[in-house]
Image (tube, rainbow, N blue to C red; front, side, top):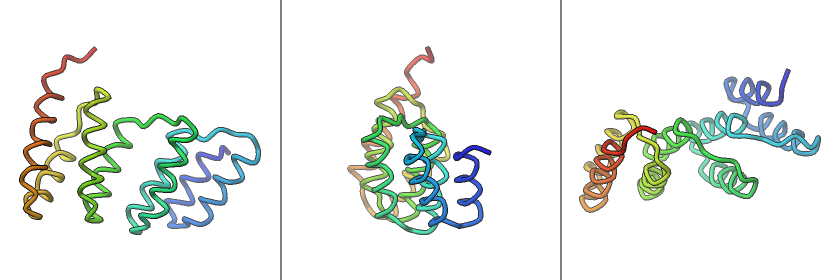
Length: 140
């Protein structure tokens, strides 16, 4: 069984601490974590409203040159919206588009609705503009 599988299973069973210990063990054993290692950890942090741990993991990913995929961006935008971190959700949405990913309509709609509810009209217009740009880019 791989570390990724063990971490994913621990997260599925809400065993966040066990998953984090496995991540540490993985690194101690000179195994390099990837996006599939971090995704379940990010998801559980969003679900359990553990924003400090989420930001720690994101920083850890950045320092280890782990590239974020479209699914991970969507997970982050949706999780941050659910936790009221709209500015951060907007930043990840923008980063996703700037990297050439086209966000899922459901991710876009969730962010737009949350911005509308909070009266963040300027941010809403910016996200709408980004989504139009993303949909206009040809798939390469």
